[in-house]
Structure formats: C-alpha cells, structure tokens
Amino acid sequence: MFIKIDFVSDIPIYQQIKDQVVEGIASGKLSGGEVLPSVRQFAEDLGVNMHTVNKAYSKLKNESFVVVHKRQGVVVNSLENMRDPKFLNEMGEGIKTLIAQAYCKGITEKEFVEKCRKFYSLFNKG
Amino acid sequence: MIIKENIFWLSFSIIIVLSFLGFIIPFLQKKTILFGSRIPVEIIDHVEIRQLKKNYKHVYLTAEIPFLITAWVFLNNFSGKLIFTIILFAQLILMLLIYAVYNGKVKQLKKTILDRESIRPGKEVSIVDTGFRDGKYLISVLWFVPSVLILFANIIILLLSYDNIPERIGLHFNMQGSITLSVQKTFFHVMHIPLNSVFILAVFVFVYYSIKRSKQEIDSHAPETSKLKDRHFRLIWSDYSVIVCTTAITWLFFLSLYMNRLLKIPSAIFELINIAFPLLIFLSAIVLALRTGQSGSKLKINVPVTGTGMNNVNDDRYWKLGAFYFNPKDPAIFVEKRYGVGWTINFGRPVSVAIIIVLAAVVIIIKLLSGK
Image 1 (cartoon, each protein chain N blue to C red):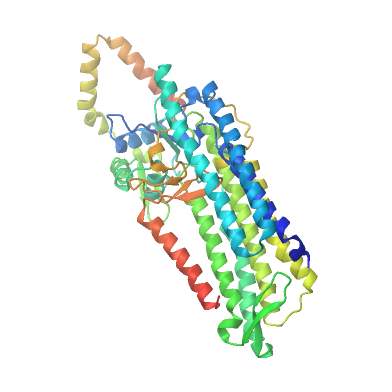
Image 2: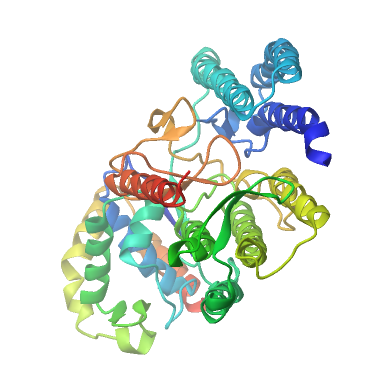
C-alpha cells in the first residue's frame, strides 16, 4: 500500500503515517497478517528520522492496529483483535469537536450522517 | 600476441564507448529528473526543456570531438598504462563537467519557466510502498552459494595439493599468461588468489545488499508504474551481479591452479579469457544499462498510467553537481544515482564515509600483501 507524506503539512509526519495505515486497514488495502517495513527501512525509504516511524508504530501498536512480533517485525492485526467497544466513548471528544466545526459551517445533521454512511459503506466493501 | 598489436585500438575503443555513454547517460533517467534536477511534471515536455536537452547534445559533441582527436594522437604516439589512465580520467572529468554545467542550467531554466508562465506545480509529496520489498524483486541470496562452494573447493584443492606445488610459483602474469614474477612458495603466496576471491565475493554480496536496501524511487505522479519499474530494475541488476560474481570466482579458481602450477592453460585460451572476460562484463553492463534505463525507466510495464498530478519533493540542493548525494538528515545510506545507472551512497552519512574507507583500505592491503 502506498503511503503519501506531505512534508509541509501541519499534520505531523508520524500522524500521517498512522492515519494512512489505519485507513489502509479499514479499506482493505492492508490485511491482517501483512508485515509492514522495519523501522529503519521505512525511515530510509521516506527520508525521515527513525524516531518518527517508531512513534507512528508505537501509537498503532498501543491502539492494537498492529502487533509487534519478535521475528516478523510489525504485523497488521486482524480486525477481530482490534475490536474494542470502549472506543465509542473514547472517540466522543474528537467527534464532538468535528461536529461543532461542521455545525458552525452550516453542515446539516443529514449531510453529516450521509457523509458517515458513505465512508462506512466504502470500508465495508473493503 | 593479439594484445600487443591491438593495444591502441582496445584503449581507444574504451574511450569512445565512454564518450558515447556521456552523450546518452542524462537521457537514461526518467523524465521527471533531468541533469540531476527534479522537473515538475507540468513542464517535463516544455519546449525550452526540450531545447536544453538538444543543446546539451550539441555542446557535448563540440567538446568531445577535439578531445577524442587529442586522445587518438596521444594513444597512437605513446604507449603505456599511465597515458591511458590519464586520458581515461580526463574523459570522465569532461563528461561530469559538462553534466554539472547543465545541472546548473536546468535548475535556472526550471525557475524561469515556472515564474514567467506562473505555473503552480502540483503538490510535492513523498510516496513509498509498504509492500515494496514483498514478493520477487531480487534474485534469491542463495544464488551466491555456488560462488561460495567454488571458493571453498578452490581453498581445499590448494590445501590438499600443497605438497605437490613446486617451490617456485607464479605471482604476477601478463595478458598472454606468461608469468612475469615468480616467488618462493609460501602459504600466503599459494592462497593469494583465493584471498582476492573472498574480497570479490564480499563486494558482490555488498552490492546485492545495497540493491535490496536502497531507497525506493517512486514517482509521485505515477506511483504504480514507477514502483513496478523500480522493482523489475532491481531484479535484473541483482541477477546480473550474481552472474558476474559466479563467473569471476570460477575464472579465479582456474587462475589460482595455473599460478600454482597445478594446471596448464594454453596461452591462446588464457589470452582470450583475459581480453574477452573484462570486455564482456564492460559491454554487457552497458547494454543492460541502456535497456533498463535508470530505475527501470526504459522498461515496458503494462499498467495504464494514471497521473496523480503530484510531484516528488524537490531535493536538488542535496545533489552536489547533480551527481553526488550529500544529505546528513536523510537516514538512507544507499540511493539511486542521478548520473548513470545504478546506486550511489549518501555522502552525508558517517556510515557511507566509513564504507568507502574500509573498501579502499582492503584494496590497498591486498595490493601491498601481493607485493605490487
């Protein structure tokens, strides 16, 4: 799966890596069991510091999107193992800010929900 | 005898081939890199960019013709290794010099076009593939096993027949295979050639490893196509490295038996191999380079190109003279060349500098030990 990094973006590089890996898993471009590049190799290919890749990987690991095997390295977790009902509460604050922004910009509830549906069906297909 | 009569033609042909390479090398790159500079996809076919390419060819030929005439005169009137070496280096420097001038020119022109026509190039992003090194993109490292076995066989045969080796053995030889320096048999002198083989094998394994590890060169405008090309490119060159390595180790095996007087090689065959082998490697590498292009730019890939409209991150300032990569902030040690076909190292990394020092030291030590 291609990872695209924008070096002048406000979004930190580790966050860009993390977001794209998660999106890759949701859309099916990355499947459970797939091995991701080693920290060193990934850093060299991207031309970024190893700490940056390490940070992305440890965040992904903490949120169980990936598991770190001693021999294989960083491996995409299976969707079953990622399941976590508590996440509904955890995401509350983040989604509240997003909805507040959308509300202020005049996005209606219907439009917002429609957008959500679109992405859900996209990921369901994957 | 072939050699002596044709030494002039042989040396002059090498200079001619190099000259031809200097002419063609800048155009073996993919279109988004010209004279070592990243060209935004919006202007790769711009008329002034095309003119600059033509202009390079004219200037190159104008400089090369008098140079080649001078080389001809010198090689014709003087013989010897030194004069050839000087001309060889002069040729290489001339090639690089003209290229460096055009590196400066293209950077200027790029700016001028973008400013004058107020083109806003697509976003600059770096793209890598997480699965780039999955599947078949390199020959298996196990293909080095034959070389290792031949090398072991070489050492074992020399050890077993040590007592049968005469008291005086050959150390140096000329192109015809006549021994020009004989020395008293010592363990080191007997093992002198296998020691060289160990070094050669190590160098090829190192090359293999650098092909594997080298930074991905993915075109942000056409990620899928350039990824496939780069992978195919690595596969072909890793195959080639293994073939050259195995052949070289095999030849050294026979050579060591010959020098230790365990095997007679007819001088005609000896001479033939001595000329044909380096020439074959030199020419096959060139043919292969012309067919693959840098990062596989000349390879045909049956994937529809869907342009993303994005550009690679402009890293021109790290490419000194458009040819030497110096970027202390990039953790990568191996990167694809800007001038030529293959890989180079990031001179901004201490590890790379250490690699050069170690390689040079080993070469010097082997030379010193063999008494040259």
